[in-house]
Image 1: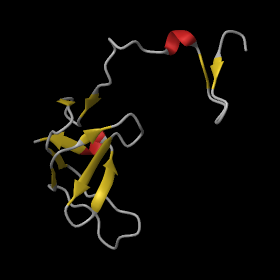
Image 2 (image 1 turned 180 degrees about the vertical axis):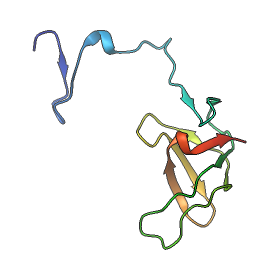
Image 3 (image 1 turned 180 degrees about the horizontal axis):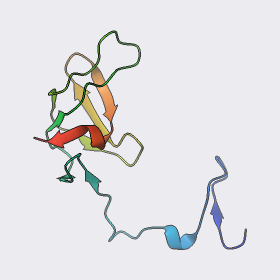
Image 4 (image 1 turned 120 degrees about the vertical axis):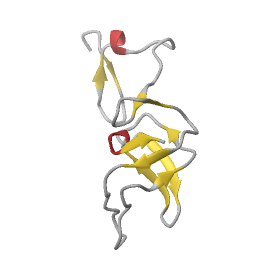
Length: 95
């Protein structure tokens, strides 16, 4: 397909040059530009609504032992009172 690679399941196309090497590490930054790592503790900086819950996550909530993933919501974590959650790094700061 004109030098492009294609996913047979979703139809996404990309160029082989777009593939990052192992040297290009996956980097996630918080709202202040600090680099986050697996196991870090972060603080939510904004009240966040939670689907299916009458209450949201309040600003100032501390989240321990985060896990970084390569998705739109790039932080997986467990929040007391809510359970497993996925957060965007733009709404947290490193504690």
